[in-house]
Image 1 (cartoon, rainbow, N blue to C red):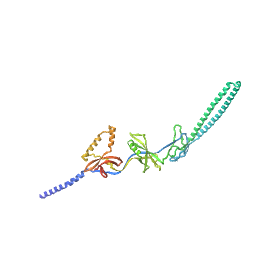
Image 2 (cartoon, helix red, strand yellow):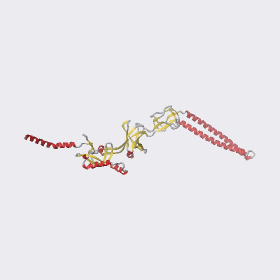
Image 3 (spheres, rainbow, N blue to C red):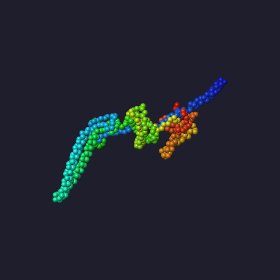
Length: 412
């Protein structure tokens, strides 16, 4: 019996001795485990991303003022052309005939002027002789005959004016026919590259109702191109900051995924586009194109650099997104932040005044991050600055480099 009590005592003492370590181990295992990320110093860049279409700086559409079949075609797609170069010719037979007709008409009108001039000169001489005879003696010629000579001269003078006007009209008609003949030669008005050709040899043009478009030529494509980006209205203020600061724009195109292109903001156009209640503005970016890699119609993925800061203290964005859901895990001093957050979430912001919205915007930079301290979460207030897709600048706050911040709760 003594041995039994002795064994029981030994077991009791052993259990008491093992309780505290087991309790401490159980307590450690019961503590919540958190995912963490470190505060770091780094260069941070604020960018606005968008997509756009590559277009030539200028597209010159060349049409035809006259109608007729295409007799000759001298250029094709991608050909380089110079100003004044002959691109195509329209069959000129009807225009040659019109010029010949109008030239003959002009000769006829000029001959008519000479005929009337001769008649006028004769009438003038007749009138002068009649007046001279009358001055010698009233019996040599009657006043009626003198009036006939006088009004005949006046009539021929008027006919001369009509004939001279007919000459001017014939000259204008001839110039019009010669101009139409000249329009039969389609020439380039600029130096550039043919990016569109809408005609083929033998095709007949009909220019009576509207000018048919034959070619589109893009000047200086090998010097620079434009990228037309559609930027959301919420980001236009940032884009304007970048334009004023002269900051660069970087972009890529699918054709050359390993090449990074760079340009400058040339223009923010005041012509909004609304699509499904989303308002965007076109932003024109100018980029060099010496290798002709940027072609019309390419889709570009752009990043507008708004601001760059080097060697600044940054917090991981995942830490800013973390928000404790269980009040028991937060130290008592900071639980009011959760309650205030819940109250704010319950408030409706639809009826907020403009002034309240501005105040809320100013408070947006005041944030809290959470640090695990003795099994409880402790809130640290910070003021944030610019942000990229991974880190956000810390403008002020009680944080240090390499300090670990909670980004989430680990699940077993």
